[in-house]
Amino acid sequence: MQTALFSGGKGDGLRRQARPPTGLLFLLAFSIFMTIFSLYGARASVFEKARESLLDRFAPVFAIFSGPIRLTQNVVGDVGDYFSVMDENQRLREENEALRIWMHQAMALEQRVAQYEEMLAPKVVEPGGYIPAQVIAENGGPFSRALVLSAGRRDGIAKGSAVIDGKGLIGHVVTVGNKASRVLLLTDANSHVPVYIEEVDTEGLLSGTAERRAEIRLFSGRLQGEISAGMRVVTSGTGGTMPRGLPVGEIVRVTDDDVAVVGLYSSDQGAHLVQVVDYNFPKTIDDAAASEAETSEDAPLASAPDAVAADG
Amino acid sequence: MRPLRARLMRWLPMDDQHYATGLTVGVAALLLLTSALLLCVPLNFFQGLVPTPILPLCLIFIYGLLRPDSLRPTIVFLVGIVQDLLFGAAVGPWASVYLLAHVLIVWQRSYFIGRDATVLTTGFAATSGLALLLYWFEMSILGSRPMPMLPLLWQWTITVLSFPLVLTLFQRSIGRPRPKLAE
Image (cartoon, rainbow over all chains, first blue to last red; front, side, top):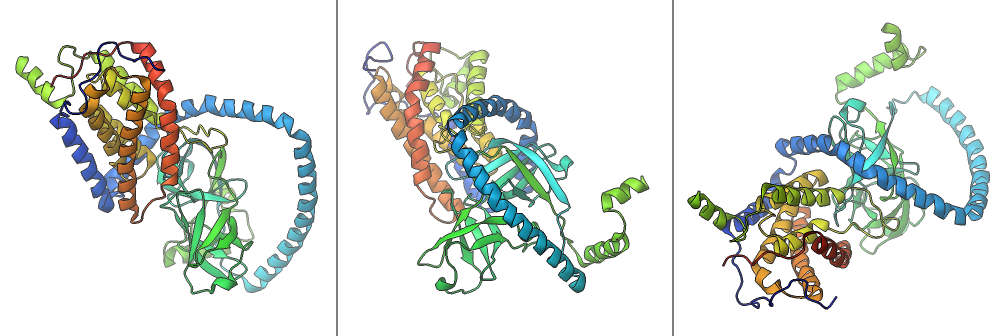
């Protein structure tokens, strides 16, 4: 478009400009000050409460916004699927064959593990359940990777809970409102999740890079040669906010400075439905003892919810 | 009311001859807030390969040119803070990005009056580039390490490419610009 958008003569040139109002400059300086203050107080309770409150207030708006978009994406996706239905069918048949073999092996292993657990009686805290939630919003910034879920505190979601999709861990909950919660994805630059590399029995910290990948910095001084591509990475459970063994990804390569790049099983884009892991690790020794006593009393009987229902 | 008006003229980027009505200010605020909320909607263009353009930057630039009296700095600041809180990150970076873009366009408005779309797009590219550079700087300080430039450059490119479309839509909806800022 070569025609001038505005009628009238051209501007005054670069030398004669209007001075920005003092109020505008003051607000700019104030916002930069707030950013610097965030270095020390980003997680201050006043900001956390503001985040939770806004999350709750805007959750219905996000749901309204995302509804038509999801519908459009589904329709476009369905049309695209028609063109690849034969290939997809063949791939699924092959995958089904492989999964049947895995299923039989898993059932045999499950039986064996149950026998060992009976002999050793280990104190393992299992997840209480899984809370399904819909993704209603996501962070559209260049560096941040986060999702907003349609479930919150009233649905049983707690801060720090692991969030998984059909393939594996996608992140953990960082803000919980009553009706909605925010999930920090594994690829976010501020995400740090303790993980475990199975084949070499090593723990590390999986950190996001803001570039759609995550990498592990190891706690122990493992030699570079010991860790290789293809090794499976799962959650370690260190910290007690998420259970051990949730699938995370595979080592893709190890860089020269001993950083292992991880290919995540889950994608940080396009998740519609996720599950929040309801996991309550005992916080104190008293909690653990109470939990153990309760378990030993209720073990031969029904599960806890059933017992509560019976009491009611 | 004259002293109040004179005081407002010092604090707000108002046009000397045209005062924005409550409605136009409200519409500007609503548009800016909606564009900020759109950044939170899972649009996922092309399987998520193409990021959502930062439409608030486009709106701030266009409003700064066409209707500087309608978009108040306080509204820009508040929308930035709301976006920061909704993103769940530090409070302040997006507010400062939007305000810097606003400062730059108010400062250079008289230069852009009467220029064609190519110049305006170039001006927007420079303005948004500087504003996003501030964002990169702030996030690098907050993260205690330099953030990767690639995601930022990619989103900036998409934003600049979408600017002419937003400009055309805006121009068709509100028409001629109001006179220049009082100097």
